[in-house]
Length: 136
Image (cartoon, rainbow, N blue to C red):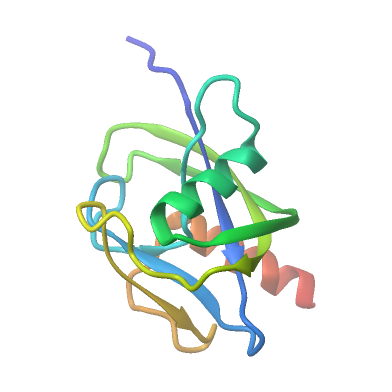
């Protein structure tokens, strides 16, 4: 039986010190890992609009999408699904992050790229690989 590929998106938000904003996932896929905020794209919703909506819902902040950073792909990371997700570079334009969905997220934080949590999501790893390639 074939299953459809799911579409999600995320945003890589950096602060003035270059630290990356991550949230801890409590649900599959990748429960327990720290990752970029974002979520599932609804039918008919543009990916950039999804990123803005999901981050408002998850962290209570408004973001500006600056551009496409990379495309992440996650295949069966605990949920039996195959996900494709554009990851956008973004910045906070209003609000202060706080966990809004305590049933989905265990916390949030700013992380220096040389001091990341031990377990990060595949989309976060894809974003970091892309940044390293860009820095070469």
